[in-house]
Image (tube, rainbow, N blue to C red; front, side, top):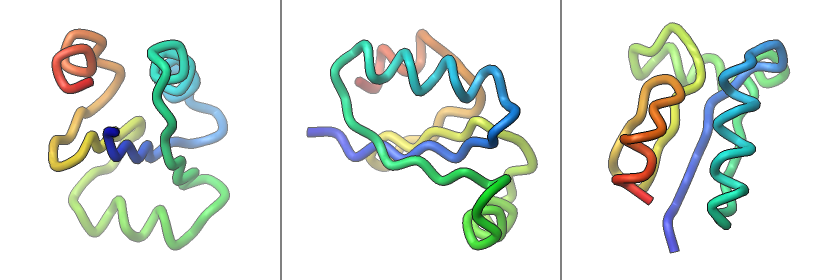
Length: 74
């Protein structure tokens, strides 16, 4: 089973698309919403990322909704 973590925000269209896509693929994920969770926002900025979605699949990182990269990692 893959360990998937998605950093998202409430108003992000691509974040919603990523979450739906991963669900359609049959995977569960942990969501960290940076617009609701100040700690998640700090974590994300601390890693050097300024935007969302940022998707961690095990040790790999996908920046934005990159369907090809997600297919490769899932």
